[in-house]
Image 1: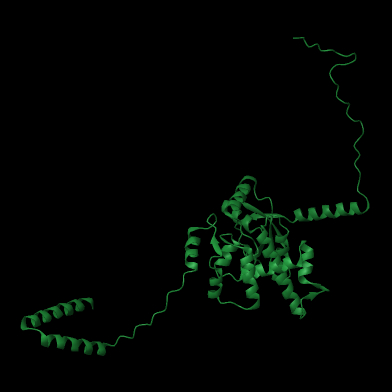
Image 2: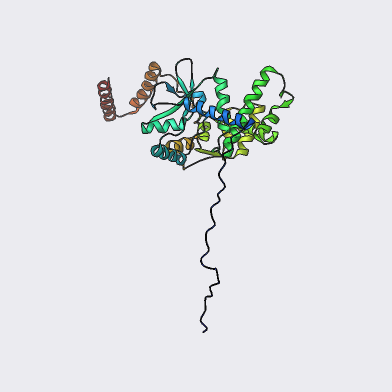
Length: 334
């Protein structure tokens, strides 16, 4: 076998690295509109962080408003555990937003889950106070905040879009007799805002109404992701509800076979509740007549007289002895 000969060319050798570019790095200062945008961004960022404070998680001023709590989607058990691990490891990095109410209380606007974890870990929580004229403005802020988040699942996005549609339509309805505002239908306006068709917004509204029509206990568990249901079924329910109110019994009949329990997130109490959800109530029975002592004595006396007349002397002695024992027993119970 011929031996391979390595030939080295004149002027060869190992390849030399290219010389680093000597072109200096030039930092270009923003001008015109870019300079203004950078300045505004810097000022807003500074204002945001300048307004962040820290307090204990169990600060008595921090309260949960019942009407605002339902605007916050619940985390699954797995999501909540991950959030708890993150805060335990790195602390609460995002501040909770609080509505500084005139009654002196601070109502949570954003950060319900973070606050819950901080209270469990007994750690300080960053917060920022916000001012609002009233509850409607807070709800509108929270709706926009939730719809701007990326961690919502698809049905949650539909739920909040539907809520915004219903709220917007109701607000317009107070001022106008029709659904039009500034020459646009509410659904078209919101559709353009969220990048979907106006038909999607209208289906979202039916879905929202269907969720809100769920019986007490079912609605909360659905939003907490302990109950599952097909979106199309809840849209149908919402469509029916929008045309004619339904009694809870009819709603339950409609939901039979359409609701399922999410075993991964449900507790034993949720399972017991679900098993009793579609159980028909017991039939009402006719209440017994009021007890009448005189009627009872007369009736029993007739029975005893009839039996006593037909008895032999020995049987009469046995009957008398039997009733003596009954009387003695009854006297002891008095």
